Image (cartoon, rainbow, N blue to C red):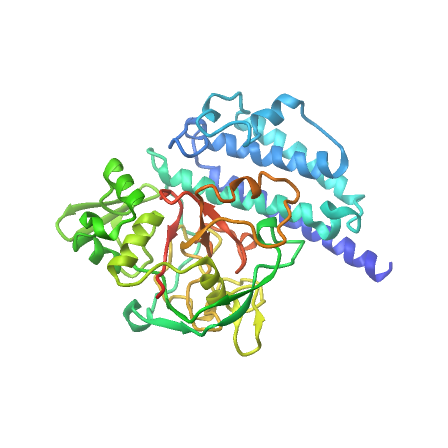
Length: 437
């Protein structure tokens, strides 16, 4: 067997193993959820979990069978049920979705057919198949829905009580969490030209000049955010964007989502059905862009731009090269960041010194997504691929960029260039922030 053929066979085995592992994780997250909770819509901005589950299988059928090989198992009606662009979340509870047993059988049938098609696939032909791009895209899609499912499970009124399977290290915030790192002025390479793992909105790589700035060494902690709350930050209109102030008043927002105060100066939170005191040394989580922005104003700082965030995370000023992850190009091994869901919570800040960027900034991947002060837009040279609905339809439409992933993000689903986005009022995300100036 020649070298190229051996490499292709190895790649196919890796794809099969990753597809299997991804499906095992999806089912692990849902295995203790009742059928009633699977079918219910637990928040108006989230889909019923059973819709997400069926959609994962239908997306796989669409791309690994239909688009890649012209094969179809299902009729058009099923594709319509699981087409996210056809049905807003408000409509999904009333759709004729598959129940759990039927969804299990459907996902298994699609997977069997997808692996059978992979065996004969030419991974040197066409943009979809070349080097396994479409398989990586489907893996990323399922991983992203795993995190979305966890957001829904956090909102489930009946409570979701997962058992942590990873023990987190203790944090050690430098300078009590107040330290900042200086990032010199200069040009760096933003984005990527990778066409196998990166998604279309991350391309193309382009030079960006960034003025000198400072950025927090670690994300803003619960302790620091408590000071903002107890200093009346939610009542000081001058700190807030006018749209943010209107939202805060209309929605009666007085603290991060899931926080409550049983007595003065004592803050508790609800986490997957558990009530517990807020950990002062963990990153603040479940805050909107507007809350993050108001805190930054109160602290005499601001939120970083997307370019500033990516430079601080990815650029090595010594070698003048870009890193795939803050710590380098080596894959995540569990020691550099709190990713992969199974801790079911953020670690305390400073807990992963091995994950520092070249500038010494900590925690830029994992724990909590981080708001940036940049609207979601197309990079120079952007080309929608393989479908407009992944990125292009969201550009310049009121969405704000988030970076860095969270504890609930699967490792394959985030790098220094990965871009997430949502409306500035959203708080169901596992999202926090750090400041700049």
